[in-house]
Length: 467
Ligand code: AMP
Image (cartoon, rainbow, N blue to C red; front, side, top):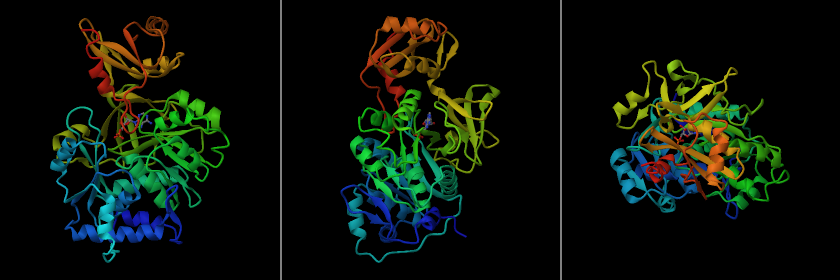
């Protein structure tokens, strides 16, 4: 039997193929039947361009329904999908193309679909085994070369099925999709849940508060990055009535501020379900659908995922093993070997702790750990205190080279306040070595497309504060 992921997803398509798959506001809806036809034509076009099973298909385009069609067609023919952020510069793209050597590189999804329009649809699905590659996702690569995480048909299928069940997806759902689709969140987590349920998606090509609020009226589930939620909270239209149709709000890709969780519940009555994942393993843990969703915790490991804290410490690097973990980094055998323990556990690079209930609490990336005067400072501990201070919307704590201490703690705060007063307030609750020696106020913290604060940029900008 073939384990091609496309077959699994298509088995979820509704028997009534006239049902909508995509509902773009203001544009024509696309039915599941049309989606199937389009992917069959595009599969023929890819084959016509000489793409063979195992070949890479690279795509760098703005988000569109056509891009999803190309993704599904790539799966159908057993090729390997390689999405690239539209924001990458030609020099960056050049690196990915040299590294992954795709058989085709598409930068105009609409033109490619026009090329396919007159072709005889190819309804076949290439047989694949669970261990065959389905996609390569390049990590954002804040240090060194960006690495291509190799995800298999089996890994994506296992994760999709686990999430579909954990989050209670059904035919009756309508998913609001406003995420980018060059990243695992919008591409795999969101799309696969919708396809497995055969449910429609309110389809937004970009996040826009007003369009999302309008879309929520006809949706039941939304997946977002934390910045979606903070931006919705800043909009007066976010009310109990505006979200009355919704059953579930999910957040991930970056830490959700506890203040955002609390404010969202107060405004809408919904407790956001936070989950944790990464390109190398898709989703790893989730708060429960039924049961208490705790602000600040990313919940429990998904069924089948083994999770432990490395080094036998209470707080330490999170290691995982399970069906959705990637095969390794494309053409980087040494990096791959360094990233796995001998017993097969993948070293995530995130630091966290498990509480007695088995819930995971993440305290940041291992590489963001600060060592000041020989003592470890976990930025999250300081950030949580700062975020409670008046005038602070969000904070990012980093280490900057310091002549005495090796590194000195610096806090960069989105908001306004008085540096000396804030330092004094923190000092009353924190050991001296953990207390920021400097606090800098900014209008907005630098973030990537997924809303993650770019601490590497902050370290560059504030690297000479003490020297
Ligand atoms: P990426 O591979 O770009 O998806 O980035 C994955 C990283 O995002 C993880 O290793 C975590 O550091 C971070 N991340 C994802 N979800 C969460 C979350 N809910 N809370 C905290 N960090 C998260």
